[in-house]
Length: 157
Image 1 (spheres, rainbow, N blue to C red):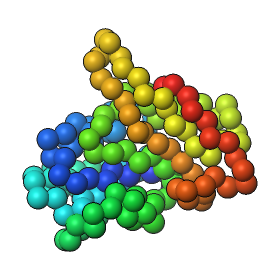
Image 2: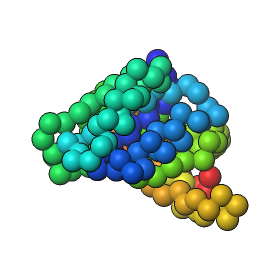
Image 3: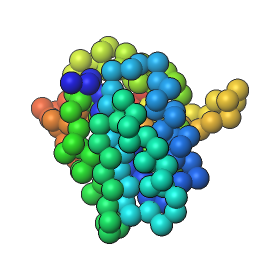
């Protein structure tokens, strides 16, 4: 069982989807599974997702035939398929630094009562990339509330 389940929900982000997937696959931490979802995109997204169907890190490819109109429905679908202790909802229109998972899990190890890791947005002037909305959470706690009053830990990556 992987330590982290990476859920990549997508809708019409073919122009950046491959960069997102490659940024996940380039992580320095490698104990993860990748779950790819598409919410009936009208662009070339499904063809890009299909290129990764047989990748060893891809454990699920979930393609909707009708658009749900809800990113939260996609998150829930991904959570239902996830096997990892930690969940990373990696939105399809973003990229991540190769050390994101390694850094996040290191921060979570330092705070054993934490249920969430929410990195603060930042801009790296050397790489000119912006990292927003990368969220990790424990699937046992759900999306809306941490279990047992555990703290939410914002931290810069």
